[in-house]
Image 1 (cartoon, rainbow, N blue to C red):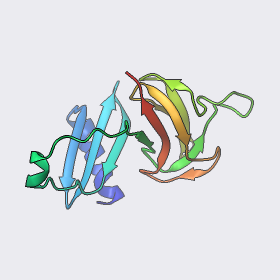
Image 2: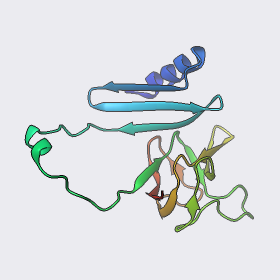
Image 3: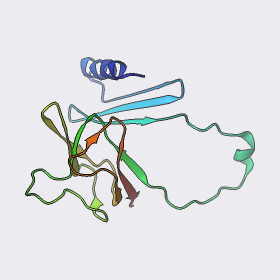
Image 4: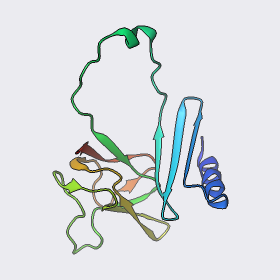
Length: 146
């Protein structure tokens, strides 16, 4: 799937007033979700592992709570602050709430606020302030909180 196809999906959403669109093709899954009329997050995942029949019969294995990855919804420049003099939106260990701004990505001279979609605690910040980011690049790893 290329950028042109993703843009066409976004246009389809806007033209039909869709809030969410999910497409799976060739083991690639793309999910687009809008909030308040603006595209909020794009999540991509690679092939989902196949469920083996014998795995269904096994007893459940309890794993450590997995971290949630917050990915870049666009290509641009990553900023941890709203201005050079400001404090960072979040630091490692910060608790975040859904809807809270956690960073800014500048794309084509526009500052796009990236908001949290989960309640959690920032465990890792994977991009340095002012560095370029790619579409789908992991920005943060978050420990979910109840």
